[in-house]
Amino acid sequence: MYRSRSPGVKISFLPMPYLGFQFDEKALFEAISEAITLTPEDKGDHLLRRQSKLNVLLEKIFVLKGKMEDFKTALQSAEIIMELTPKDDPVLAYRLTNLANLLAFRFEREGSADDIDKAIECGEEAVKIASQIKSKDNDTLEGRLLHNLAVKFELRSQYTGSLADLDEAISKSGQALKILSRRCPDRLLYISATGNMLASRFQRTRKLRDLNEAIGTMEKVAAEIHKNEPIRPKLLDNLGNRYLDRYQYTGDAADLGKAIEKSKDALRFQDAIFPRNPDSGKYTTSLAKKYAIRAKKTGSSWDAFQMQTYAEAGLKHLPEGHPNRAEALEYLGDVAMFRYEHEAHVTPEVREKFNDLMKGPRKANGQPMDLGEMVRYGAKVHTFKLADDISPQMTKAIDFWLQGARLKNGRPLTRIGIFKKLGDIQMYNVEGKLAAQILRARSTCGPDSIFMP
Image 1: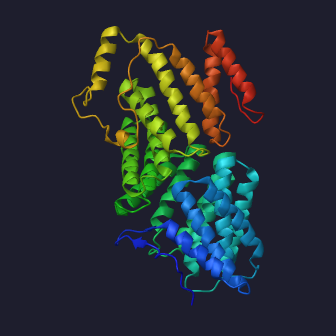
Image 2: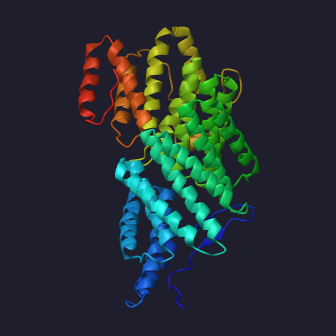
Image 3: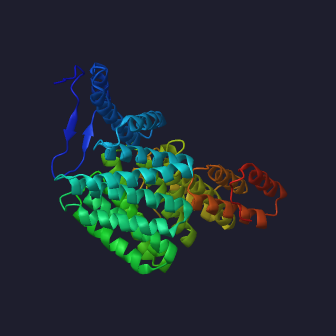
């Protein structure tokens, strides 16, 4: 029996009812790597199994830390392992799923349709193999793989707009929940993900029933899940997004308030559980979006300040190549344009009063400012001032929007929205220099750009 000579691998399970675990990935990586080097050459199946474990570990490390070198190594290894795995090997389902996950990650970063198509093919083959395995754990395996496949269909629908893919995702997710035992530790996460799929369908069909069902389902999960459960931040942010969807449909300001509060909770719990995870930047940007919408509705400089703070923090914490960076850049452009449109009418007296207020620790209503989270995420909390000259703000807005538009792995709807804003400026702007800048940018964004004048 092989025993690693590496230092002891530190795996500390969280006390029940917490789920998940924290581990020393460096020690674990060294232990598996040593096992690989000590495996005799005539034990090819043992070697392949250990290489596969190392590959899964690299995938997990990439998800936690977002380092592209881990991802590239994992994908290259996964493709080689798949070529060497016999087609009748029961572990093929697991290895197909690992490869599907990595291809989906690359699709999100680079946008190649071939990657997501192949990811779905791998996922479908994995489900087929799992359905033929006869064991007491078969239902759990098949259910997990069905949900994994559903996520891939949903991801493709986000980029192609295919309602058929989204319907397929909802169907697969429903099948998974029927199969999975109620004791499955990820069941609550899967229920929440199904709620997101229903909300996505609402955005296409405008059937409020889907959205209300999504919110009700996710609220139930949020009430049941433990406060220190690692998936709680994702659940809360998703729930905040669903309240935002309903606000945008009904106009109920209470829903917008709930959306902001849920996203704040998501960011707070993420900071407590995995503070250096790339998801921190994603949740921060999500909160910036909600403040952007409220700032547009209320015309409040305070909301615009919050939007700027969270957008800056989001951009700082999202790694290069992350698809959500386009959104952070869009909101920073929105802040600049907000200031251009609103501050021109501010009197000198109000300008001075507001700038004095921003130096202090309290809001206009006398309540303490909610700056704790901003400081924690490295934001500049005292730099939002009403400037005497606001004319550079339009140029700044265009610069941010152009950066976001040029991120080809940004979400298509995000890029379309940015191009629409640039088009509006081109149409109404009377300054020839700025209009020319936009036209030049239009010609440099590439042949796949969607520019809406």
